[in-house]
Image (tube, rainbow, N blue to C red; front, side, top):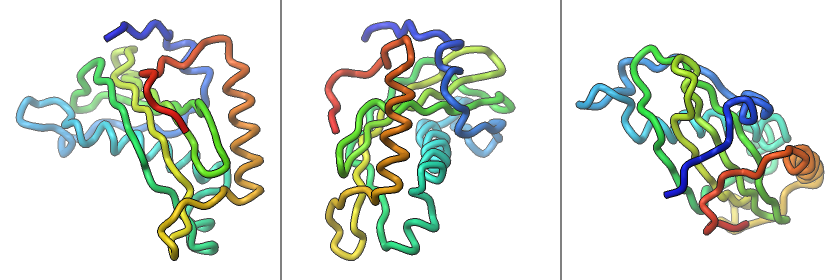
Amino acid sequence: MDKISTSLAEIRQLQRAFETTIPQAFLDENQHVNVQYYLHLVERGLGEIFRRVGLGDRYAAADEIGNFALEQHIRYLAELLQDDQVSVHIRLVDLSPKRAYFLAFLLNDTREELAATVEVVMMNVDIARRRGAPFPSAAKANLDALLARHRGLRWDPPVCGVMRV
């Protein structure tokens, strides 16, 4: 597995999508954050990004449309411990009419280190039909703008190389 060379300064060029302090309830028998909570933290960040682009709860309730995760890839890079301050930063890597490919960075702000990366390919779904559906035009325009901003960054996203939209 290649080392991730992306710096914290580069990652922090991305807007912070979520931040919290690690509670005791997230710990496992090894007294570090259980793997399920890495995804939970990233999910909170993705939820905020979805809200910002117009794909949040109101959108889902009004249009009976939601999003499903199709594929995920997690790289665990450093432990998270109780009381660590963490933040989630999201980069949109690619986009199609129905799918989006996100890379989430989970930072341990207490220790100033990258704790994990999580790649997620998600699909917009017509809930009634349980099938993929194109993003609504306003949300797609917001996603297109976000992708353009993220592609304008001067560093490549450290992706695993096997996932696609």
